[in-house]
Length: 581
Image 1 (cartoon, rainbow, N blue to C red):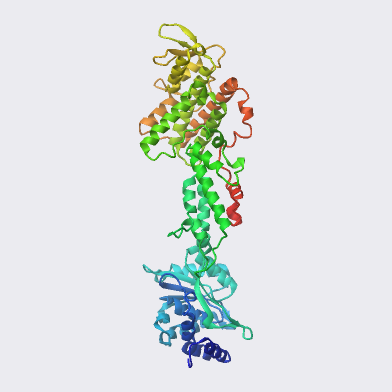
Image 2: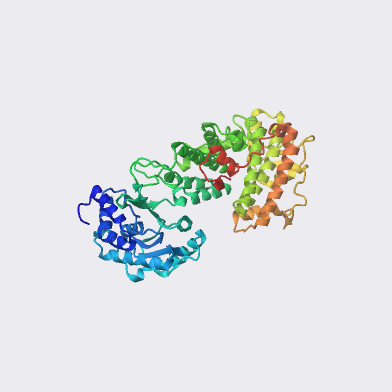
């Protein structure tokens, strides 16, 4: 082009080119005289011609009436191959003919007066011209899918394919955008800062060529879908990991929070996609997921600490009841730094809660509300192991463990309420309530530490004694409830070589390689549901009347809230409607 490559000269030359009436003459002269200068001028600002992060193998272009922006993008991206997606007709010209003309102009760029930075090296066989039968989004999507599935379209290592949506009708652009978003391909677009009001055309030297954010990547929509799925399957830790972290000193951030903190364009002073208050809402969600993670793992004390730190406070309906009740009394070793010390302290604190500190009246077994909360929570967790995790072996073992815990709880409550007799080694018998404080503490410890479900079951059925090894033998007295045979008629109510099948299966599953199918785990769940019901109605309500009534409206909070309720509590209004349900 004659003259300098400055703005005033470019504007003047552009006017002259627009005055040419023959478009073919105009476009040829545009390539030879104006295009290179436009790109040179635009390149003086680093943000204008960003392109993509990798060399481009196949570039798909939706083609409209104007060729100039498409020639610019080919010069900036310098692809090895070009796919032209064409309408049926362009001003009465068949789409393939229109595409052939554009192909010819693109081939001529190899000899055009361009700097090497912008000189593409395309050959005649580098092109794939696709004339659409209909210019609908569906036809564009299918055409691009087929084009990019071809062997010659596969990018070698280090290269990427790109879809450009600069030209063509909106319906074609929509289809191209959807395909690129679906396939995870970079999406490019040519925009302009300045348009002429009289000619209704852009000044080419004000072009901006860069990527348009893929909504699934920019907003991490797939990750949000995964967060919801993981949450609903109670995989709280993995859901929290996907949320990631915000950028910090020396860190670009990660996951959803990292993406939400990024700018949509690459300018240095660009605003982030989301407001700081939106990031705070996701941080609140992350803290909630951490609280649920601690709760699901039985770390009630830490979950309670987290629950109390929320500002604004959490509504009660999204907090499992066990967190509020058990969090106040449960062992907590979260501050201990070594595994050995943590294990030792955990065991000490656990035994104090079981035995009672300083005496048996402070035992968990003498605290009806926490006891009910624990039993209800554990039963719900067993059911989730089956329905959510499909971990049948773990579900069976926890069901059998809860069944034994309830047998022990019945005996411990009977001791604490003076409904057991103790016979010493000399044969003399008296109520445990008449023992000295020292004898009561020692005897209760032996009872609380006893293991053996079937021995305890026989005592509770009446008539037999339980040997506390060194402290005498205990048996229930008249007036104490007797154990209803809640297992009668259940699928696991059978004997095997003289052993109760339910208990024998537990022992084999713990100590050997026993496989347990879903049907057996579900049968164990039915067994322990009956055990819980019998314990609450026949023992807890007998010795602590009104416990169930006092827990009404709270004891059913044994699960994390629905995803839609969680979204509401965290005020995640920025999520698409489909992800808020």
